Amino acid sequence: MDYLSPLRSELKLKILLNLLNGERKIAELRSDVETRDTTILHILGEFSDLGLITKSQGVYRLSSLGLLETKVFKELISTTEVIEKFKDFWLSHNVADIPLYLLLNLGALSNASIVRTEATDLNLVHEKIVNILKSSKRIHGISPVFHSDYVPVVEKLLKEGNSATLIFTPKVLKKTSALAEIGIIKKYVLEGKLKIFLNEEVNIALTVAENSFSMGLFHLNGEYDYGVDLTAISKEAIEWGEHLFEDVLKRSSPMDLKSLI
Image 1 (cartoon, one colour):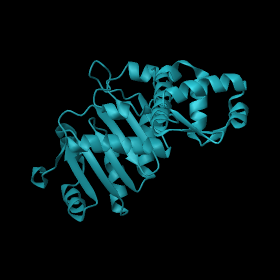
Image 2 (spheres, one colour; image 1 turned 45 degrees about the horizontal axis):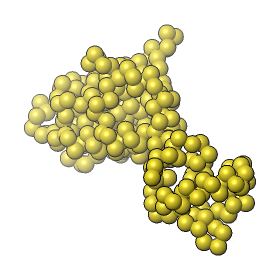
Image 3 (cartoon, rainbow, N blue to C red; image 1 turned 180 degrees about the vertical axis):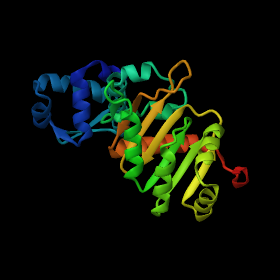
Image 4 (cartoon, rainbow, N blue to C red; image 1 turned 120 degrees about the vertical axis):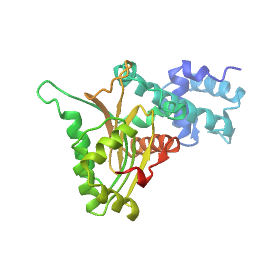
């Protein structure tokens, strides 16, 4: 019994994915997948032997097993498409800090796009992140690299009553606190508007807001890639980014206010 056989047949996958949308009669399947009844019946017979479908009064539907496997197949296909779509991005960057369950769910990034600096605009990626910060009311961010422009933008966001949860490396926190007013930072922390965590070895730059997502990675040689970001505005991508943030957050430590001098 070969449970992976549908992955090797476009027609078999098409029938399973069709049944994932609801029960079907032969005539409906014929119309949806555009093939002969005899071919469909032969495939349905294989699915029945594998326990993937059930039949009642001429109506075919996925069994519980079929429902599970078809959802897995659908996710696998979607993930594979995203890997191929952004092949050069994954190939040239360190993805070790992305947990396995999110790598297996890369399909959530299907509507994402690559923002890349150009010879005529070297600040394109940087400006994209600044615009996300300026237009957001809630920020979850991971900063393994420092950029002075982010400090006043986040300060303005907090001043307007919004919130931010940020994860820094100790070096980035030190540089950030050197530019910001320590008293203001402490004020926002005590008010609960600002939460700061520390992580010694994070290799992801991440900005997740209520309406957008942006991720930057390090090159394989250990240098951060300032020139390329993966961005998206879809609900699925934002949720994926939130899960990534929460994963890193679990491995981070709350900042001690006493460490700010």
